[in-house]
Length: 216
Image (cartoon, rainbow, N blue to C red; front, side, top):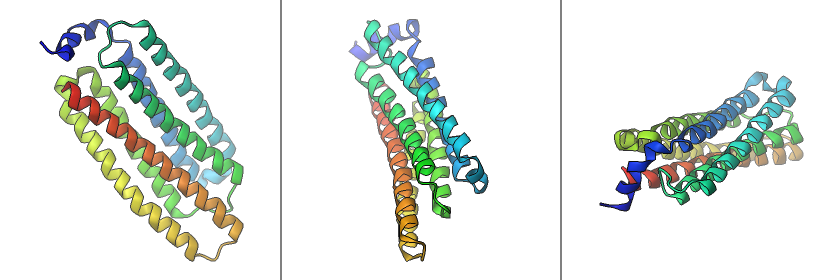
């Protein structure tokens, strides 16, 4: 019998990791909802409030990630390899951090206007976090849900490709515009932060694929 098969016999007895991973995915998704709000037309008037809420989600994410690593240190048998649980928790936490960093940049720079591409990228981020949340939910029964998790990971990759196109268009349009140089610099950095968040989401997708290949 393979080692993974042996470990799977013990997995149902040790379910603490699944609720914790689910919680990090939920925190990530809530942060993404707030990010869309931030870049929406009425987000200007609520920048401080929204950024504060995103920061609160980031703090919650750090705490739950800490619980996951504590559980890894204290648990002999884990449902997946420790390295895979650690990588997934790290990737999700990094994505929450990237979203918070994007929001902080908006608050810090306080741009006069934001191009449509920023909202479009934020919406892609939200779609990506929804895929992550659904995929992570499926990990507790990976033998039955492996195809669904795989589809979520594939969709994340497609979203990343869409974001690449939007990013290039956004930067191109920005340099073709006649806005003041200082505003151009602000918006360029914000768009780059959004792209980094998308890339972080794609990293989560890759980790999910690795888990599926190993355990499905």
